[in-house]
Length: 364
Image: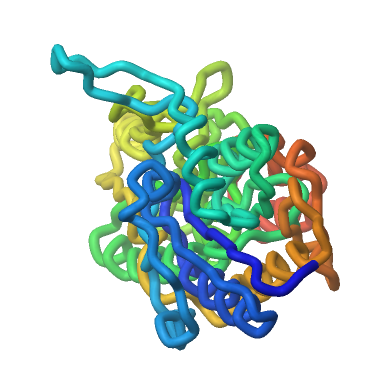
């Protein structure tokens, strides 16, 4: 492609360790091709309010790969196809303002949008691709549940944070002969719960892929008690649900959110354990701690690779695709093959088998 391209980059959805590393790689790789990069602040808001656009030069992004969060800001409430707007009467209406985004994108003479996000954000990117915006997607979710890519950045950091929390809870649980229930992120898939639970020597791990039986959970804890283990650690993914039930949620939350807020499963499990076993039981929600802080070396490198690959795919004209890790390569996968697809833990996974082999109860 010709030199002198003008690239836009934005972030969508929840923050994840590695977003700044993607930004740094996009800017440096584009700069080395003689292209300009502009950061669209707060997802697509910057293409509605064009004062929220910043020219990103190498000097502005050097060494930001180690920083958590994102210098561009992000949001999970800014879908231009379903944007909450306050009307003259002070009421909130949902409107489609996507044409305004396309108009500003073209007026500013951008040649391509690098859209970094999870399933919801990539669906928005695909919708804009269908409206004529050249798009390259970059996968982002700490849940690691995006289809078509082996792993997403932020996951390794989140697992490390959750594992450290579990390690710390062992000492306090042991001191009080207590059951500690730790709720971690994992809306549709239990990758964080399973990996951190095994690494942190949990007694029970509950994930969305396996509906759980509370009687079996409690029996496992009491069997441990009979063998002299007077405390227990239970790790629960936020999307886990009892057999015959469904994931617990807090409702839709704020207007314009792309998804329903999950929460409460940890408290439910703790309450049922206390009622059935008589054990002193406490619950803890790790929540946004899993998103915060500096990315691990693995996540930092993966993010830099994703960002550089996005620029290569622009040069190759592979628009309407997402960067995907298919070891040892990074490939361009059509966005329509990605959106709506959830990567769950296979039941024949060696990680599932490892948990069972070392005596961890999975609730079934």
